[in-house]
Amino acid sequence: MTEPRKNTDGASIDQVVDWWATSVSRIEPNIIEYRGIPIADLIADSSFVKVIWLLVTGGDLSASEERLLNAALLSAADHGPQAPSIASARMAVTCGIGLNSAMANGVNTLGDVHGGAGQQCVAIIDEMRSRIADGKGDALTVARDVVADHRSTKSFVPGFGHRFHTVDPRRDSLLELVEEAVEDGTVARDALNCGLALEQALSEGRDKPVPMNIDGATAIIYASLGCPPELARGLFVLSRSVGILAHAWEERQSGRRIKGPIPPPLTAPYVSDRMAT
Image (cartoon, rainbow, N blue to C red; front, side):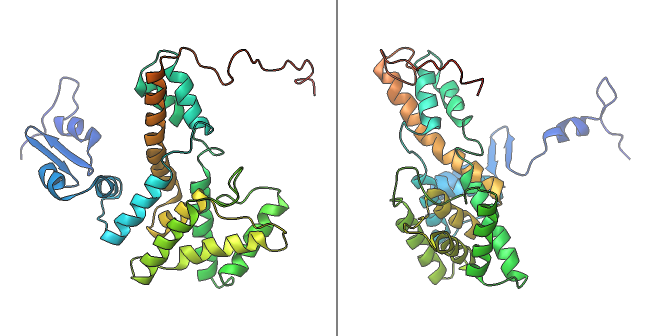
């Protein structure tokens, strides 16, 4: 039997090379493969959206699934400078840092409050599907329970309502694609049913409805595609990185230096007892 190769510290060479063993890609001299597929084949036949899915999950997408994922990614790519992630990147780039650092600055603002609603909504949809499967009621019954639970703690149901859109202009187009994918058998209807039931339950007893927003609509897509909640946030961050790059690059072209959150000569008001209260 051949003895394992050893380095000077006694660790085998196999242990060293296995340290970063991966099924994501194979990179060797003159060889580049993603999940076992030669890069030349992917360049010839694939799309960026399909490669994202391939690298992240190891799976393939049908044409209908690809259309859903593409729609989810492009619809959340940008939401203007009023989004903290965008504003943060624009301010950062005027401080003389590179695009990579400005983009990192913007991405790092995407947390549970700004950027986390999609993940949270996927988690709710997954929980609803489990309750329905366990015989706890149909989608609307379970949705009413979810809404009641959130209202009892005075918390928002993620994925619904918007701070200035009365109707999110992305909602209908995304849900139409999901409906088409359901009808052609690409995905199951359960995630869509859960999302629509939540929207209905939230609006019951109110003068004004609480419509689904981009996070709710894309959560339905990600849940339909089988994405775990945390992966859904990762895909949202990937999507929003495009808008962050676009705005940081635009701000770079302006030549402005040290652009703060409010234009001069405006200043933030001083409130002497804010901390005391």
